[in-house]
Image (cartoon, rainbow, N blue to C red):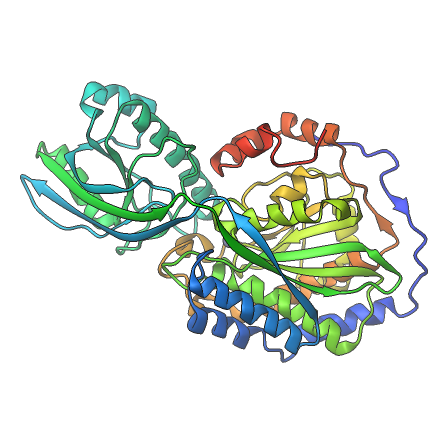
Length: 486
Ligand SMILES: [Zn+2]
């Protein structure tokens, strides 16, 4: 799949800025110098803490972020939006009984149904494939099914995370079809680590637990040794109603093309188990710091640069979706929308969302930071963060490709805390991001927005549908709620 965008690169005749090269060098130098990016991140994670959209700490983070923009001399707005559906765990507990009794640590999977002292046989459903459910047959009806997960290590990284999302969605659908009472997923990570991996599986949801790996493997061994076990679980959730949240949008107005917008964003929200340092406090702090250094140096971009701190990302990229709705009239003028959301591994390049010619522009804008490379652009459309609605609206969009580093092992987990951040690499990444943003904000050329037909062709010629289904956003596209109108 590659599009040939004939005449796509429009020369806009922006007057050449005599000191453009000096500006970008000054900006890169400032990003690499002494800035508050690390202390901001420490405040956000240690003091505000985990920031689930809709929670009091999420509201505190919004106020803090706006204040940090304003203290840096950057104008910033809070843009309210509606979250379609609350889901928060209030309390959860589980006991294994039968031939052996023990109390495993569990959490509810995000978007799990509630359960009140739900007691049922616990069955070994292997990896939860079609064959596994065929083997269980009628026995699965009204039982808890235990699904094993392969061990996720940093060596396996993001591919393992993506497989876990898709395997869980598949198994849950099979469990639902088999009439299971609930699903117990084995934690893919050792040492009692629990994490919130959302399961966006549509309306018919079962009670869904994640059990720490050590207890889940113990239960599985006992079952395979012919022991009989039951599970009794209570899952209390607060769910099902709409509520208000907000994005924070900082802005540096363009000097000569103020109506054309470069948008860079990172999500401010996190899950509740850790403090959202790698995901995504580090990159949220980076957005503020880039805006701060541009302002401090008195640099004047040709185009307007917006710095978006999104909410609702962890629940279906809702904040950035709402932005595309609220700013629908401006989308033709959005020259680029970039997302940073893969922790603090080295930036290796950018995913360019299936838009030919975008990669060549980035290659050029990365020249001032070539020493921090090498870089390679990857022209595939990727679902999984806040580029999504920009992509489906046809706006040129990027996601920073980053080294997996320690992202996967701490993903959405209680271990995602400040000390996991690679501070030096975060500084280097901020210089890389600033150079790319500055390039887009000042270059003569720009790419046009994709038409509805081009977006449909992108969907039809790639694995976008499967990706969208795994993240629970297919329906919104299919029913016309999301994406560019025909
Ligand atoms: Zn994230």
